Picture 1 (cartoon, rainbow, N blue to C red):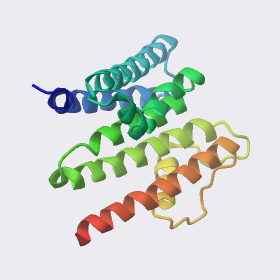
Picture 2: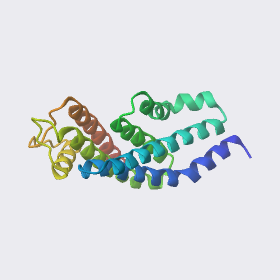
Picture 3: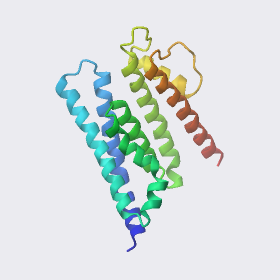
Picture 4: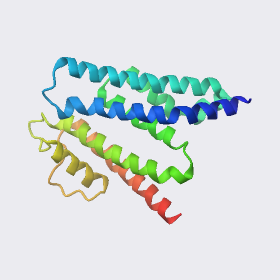
Length: 201
């Protein structure tokens, strides 16, 4: 039984559990933002869930590295995975943990067969829309000059930003909010390009 088959077997067996953990992360990330008046105990529990999910992805990376037949090549070809694992340690912000989890989920999703690609792309679009909405709401809601105050405003803004329509009725006013907007625009264009290419193929 080769190391390569062991690595492939690990990736196949852990893909669904990691996606389930990513959903748990999404809920834990969303609850304190949507329920703005959530108590300290609930917020702390959500933070614990976020770190547990991050730790699971970190363990997954280490296991795939240990099972890889050529470890240096694995590190070289999976450098985004390594960055996504290390970034939350350098600066433990909730937004960075969200970005890291999205990167790791995306990397694992690309291991699926071509037949399931459309499903994962659709999931990525939905996830990006949700996380973009929650992220911009968390940084813009308390901004003195902000006009994204509710979840509905945030979802509408994310949708128009991802599709590059940009009506301009809602726009971020903080520096971090604008960084999120740039990331959402670039990611939306990339995902829509993948969808178009997949349909054409």
